[in-house]
Length: 528
Image 1 (cartoon, rainbow, N blue to C red):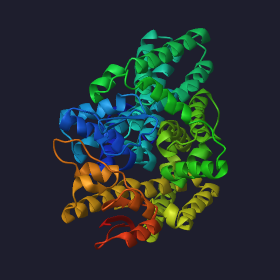
Image 2 (cartoon, rainbow, N blue to C red):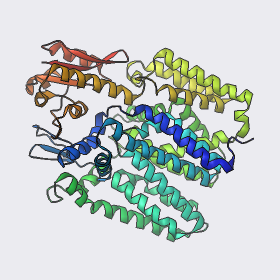
Image 3 (tube, helix red, strand yellow):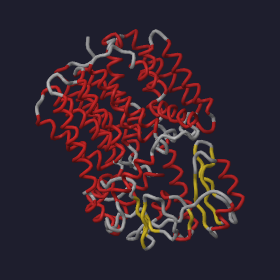
Image 4 (cartoon, rainbow, N blue to C red):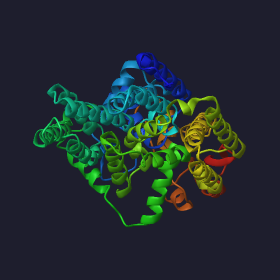
């Protein structure tokens, strides 16, 4: 018997989306942190002042892809779509943690819907539903659905564009080229790095050349590229409206292209860097789901298989070859093909996977891995502090992969670990949120003057005064930094640098406050 009955597919996809929303609702109300502030603070500042600046500052150091005028700092690393979306959303529903995180969650749910549609088109309704169900619970997709970046919108636009391109290639109906162009344009307007995915379209056009001749399909791709680059180039009125900076003052298009070109291959610490990329990618998926992805690559090879593998391989290789990327964020565009591949791999055993005896392997691995994670106090800080614990889970994934019941064991373990990370401060998102909240509360309780505080972007945003631009003096570690900048009030954290936090506390004049999470002192508030 099949897991899902085809005639109930609409009902099932609705239930899956509700389940996905339930898992992601755990993060509603969490604080945004780190680089997300470059997207969130312009929305906050636009609502408060009408200017989508990142922050105001007294500092004069400006990086290559930013612009500063009259003490107001703007970041032009990416085209305007991500900031525009968050600005419009904040204007529509109001600016708060609870409302703003709903936007990336919506993009995540839309990507799940297209994972279902693409899985259904490539294979069957059953595989589409299994893929959507996996996406609803897999840790990496949850992460991609709750971060305040443009990457989740990019994840959605890319799968939508490829889905409609597949429909065009299989039916030769030109009506499908319209959404292909629209979603490709939206992707480029979000992040110019999507240019690295263009080879996927050409390779897929070669793969599905039965009904559409190659010159015609290539022409459609070229039209989409030209339209996209043109849209990015002529998007400057939007940026001018949001920020008040003109294209004559700062060439936005050159900045977008320049950032893309800086992410070029580098030989610096090559082995260490790429090993970290690979392990971080597997860790975000969980080692068990990553093992399923690897195993799925050895399935029977047909057109559908190559469609997904081409997509996954181009994304993976472009990410691995680049330097200076946040690899975990960049690789969210590879989540969808990986999940559909695994859905097909798991579906091959059909009903046998869910009969009573085989179900016990899935339940057992779920419980064992969940219990191990709870026993070790597993969290996203441990890869830096106690990597041997993380190594145990990678080793267990290898053991499960070698077992005859590997599919059931790995699937149960990946779900168990994904759900575990929804609890407490295990997930990176919740870790950072907890630290930021502790430090904001302590800084406010001590009455430190806001514009004399040296701190991080996230803490500064949550301390910012109503009706004014967020103000920031960016803090850093070291006695020299404190002395050279005459730092008096200090609020700074780094969840991976406890030793540096403790060393900095020796410079405190008053009683130091330590933001503590998962047994580590990772943040410091004090007067120097």
